[in-house]
Amino acid sequence: MAAAAAAAQEAWRAVSPRRRRSAARRPKRREAAAAAGTPGAEPEVDGGVVLRRIQEAREDLVVSDFWSSALETITGCLRKHLEQPRAPEGPLSEALGHLHLAAPPVEADAAPGSVPEETLVPGTCCFKCVCYGIGNFASCVTARSQLAFLLLLLERCQIPRSHCWVYDPLFSPLEIAVLNALGVVVLRENEEGKRSVCGEPTVFYMPHCGTALYNNLLWSNWSVDALSKVVILGNSFRALEERLLTRILHKHYSYVAKILTGLEELAFPQTPRYMDVFNDTSIHWFPVEKLTQLPMDTWAFREEPDYQDCEDLEIIRKTEEPPGADLSSL
Image 1: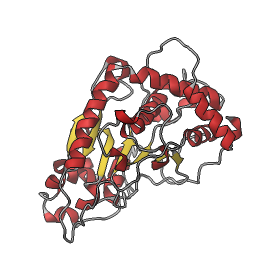
Image 2 (image 1 turned 120 degrees about the vertical axis):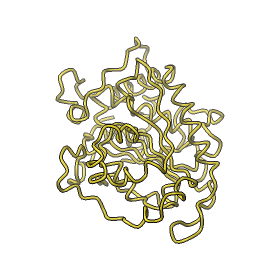
Image 3 (image 1 turned 180 degrees about the vertical axis):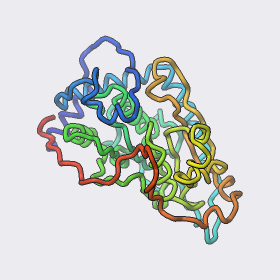
Image 4 (image 1 turned 135 degrees about the vertical axis):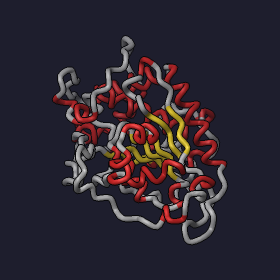
């Protein structure tokens, strides 16, 4: 298995010359969920080919105007996040503690080809990363561009790949094997977004996920202390507020509704090349100063969301664990 993983990493490094390709049009979320059966979707192939295509997507992305602008946006947000004051002591929150909670990445964890001096923000290696919902990247060009973005983000922030957890209930055994070979950790249980940061600053990368997934994530971290350690790259919360009826937002997605005045949001740039891949995407963080100004009763209600009578839920509920995958195919 170790030899197979090494071969996969080598495939990530060495890529044969190819013609540049533009990013594909973004399918609707439901269409993306069944990308393998969507007209125009690429057939799933062997792991080496998938790794090569991911590298191609990365190369296209890193030279684009979109990436340089998005990197600047993320830089501004994470720098503010790291410089913010501690959460106050008290019944609602405990001290943030030291920012550097994780050890610096070792060579084995660092992304191939990453350059230490290109660290996005000094000290960002203290972050963990969780990725939900990128879809079937083996057959969908859009999902592959989103995965390439994740890998670039890990490199620039110097977040070890072993500190990045990834899950999508749609992953095929081949895609699980590819992700394992890339060095990220594939979750085996559908958490439905209900993951606590457990006191550690965490970036949640959730491109084009259903609103319930964001709502569940907020519920799982519903305190000043926890939310002050959360950064979300995903659908614009402001756009959700504008798009959903107020009654629906407050009834089904109450945690999103209640946090709108307690967050900072910076929109990703819009460029023609990646308009449909990262449209309506923002980076969100929750400053301690804003959180502590919310009414005290904001934190009193902490009932777990159930969505029993919610139509068009847009998330896949808990199912059986995904099947295991054999790295020998790589």
